[in-house]
Image (tube, rainbow, N blue to C red; front, side, top):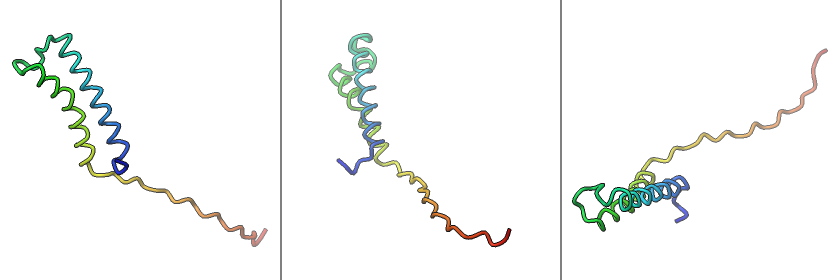
Length: 84
């Protein structure tokens, strides 16, 4: 799992947190009616695993944006001042 970039791991964790929040709201506040006639167990699975799966796949298949690496400047050679 070390080949997966940190941005993908972070987006997956954020998606999981949102999924848990929606699942709790759907079960407690919405009385399992947020998604209509879908069985409550299917609603829970969809809201829990849908967001992290979507964010993982989106981040994984997104092209990597390379950063421009700025090479350090070589030290300037100290040249004597020719005329004064």
